[in-house]
Image (cartoon, rainbow, N blue to C red; front, side, top):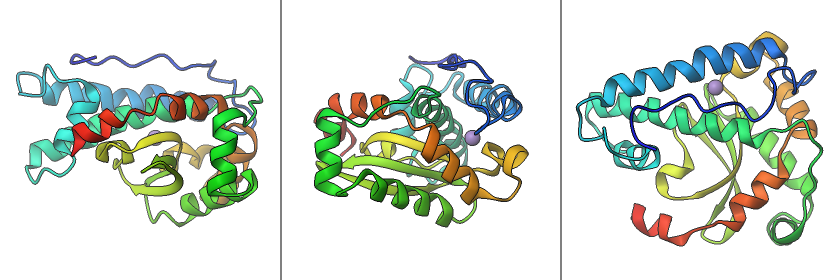
Length: 211
Ligand code: MN
């Protein structure tokens, strides 16, 4: 998918994540914040060398740029990608950790509860806006955090799940209580099937292309 980019549909109804995340929060977050990143990205790439690039290519090509316009393109492209990824990381359906993902979690964390505790800690300790991630980096599962629009995908790292810790993701429901938002999301909404799919399609070519 290259420009013009479109706002991808949500994978569930806007009220589906209640009571953990309200329909009001999803509505603002998706229709205002996410949509604005899509529109701004389209405006910025129009007529540029990025106009025919795929979204992931744009993110990787601009991640380390010192050019002011390319920094803006990075911020908006990465936020489009991060939000699409975040919506799919959440589900109101109870999903189970199974198969290859279960083995990898046992190998790298021991218990699922240890993974969740580390993911919560990453989200709580991300200073300011950003993201907490479960990734597969160099064949090993790991918890990471990134600031603002930064994403492990920019380095070709395979992302499995993410949680948005920008204030707009939780302020209407939890005000400043980011730990409570994290605790509830991690207990109720993580889409383990999506994580398993992402682990399954791990593609070393992606990493090679980024180097
Ligand atoms: Mn957001």
